[in-house]
Amino acid sequence: MPNPEIRPFSDDAGEILVRGFLHVPANASGDGLILTHGAGANCQSPLLVALANAFCEAGMTVLRCDLPFRQSRPHGPPQRGSAERDQQGLKQAVECMRQMVAGRVFLGGHSYGGRQGTLLAATAPGLADGLLLLSYPLHPPKRPDQLRTAHFPNLQTPALFISGTRDGFGSIEELTAALKLIPARTQLLPIEGAGHELMSKRNAAELPQVITTAFGEMFGAE
Image 1 (tube, rainbow, N blue to C red):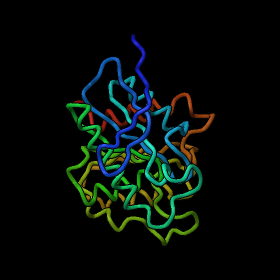
Image 2 (cartoon, rainbow, N blue to C red; image 1 turned 180 degrees about the vertical axis):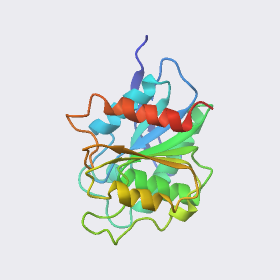
Image 3 (tube, rainbow, N blue to C red; image 1 turned 30 degrees about the horizontal axis):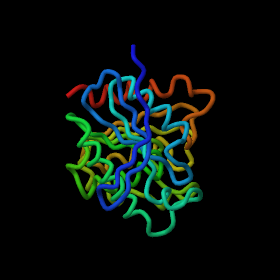
Image 4 (cartoon, rainbow, N blue to C red; image 1 turned 90 degrees about the vertical axis):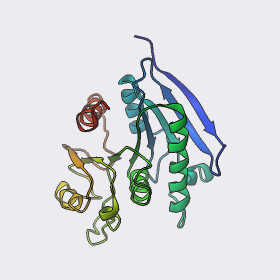
């Protein structure tokens, strides 16, 4: 089987630069997936690279990209007030992907990146065909009263949540309760023993396949 092609990607046609790496499958399904990172990482994080490779092998065109805050700051968390621009960056990435594939476009992200995807989708319900949310940061660690769910009742986009059973940003029980606020179809896949980073040396070999399988079972073929 031919190897997928991985190449740097940059598009400045819109107001916000879209920058990252494009994974082009040898046998394309016609669907596309955008993957982005958490507050302390970039698009080269091992989790994103592993998932991009796995989804690409399954036939999806995958763009793993740096959020605008990371383009401005090579290190450190996003500065206060950067969320809106980061969401616009994701919107621009979806528009880029729509030009590259004829099928569905999914929006995925780890932690902060996934949360920005849900905030964007809640205000633009037709933008993406589905969401892949890796370690959604339900609340800050040890602050379960500070839930990040105010927009959940407005989320009309189907979403697959992947979360570790040892994630300090939200327990499986807390997530299960929170997902009841979302009117769209949702599924939650617990990863036993995983923390907020989700992937570790212990599960690195099988985790990408576990996630792509769950994704395929939820969204299937068009």
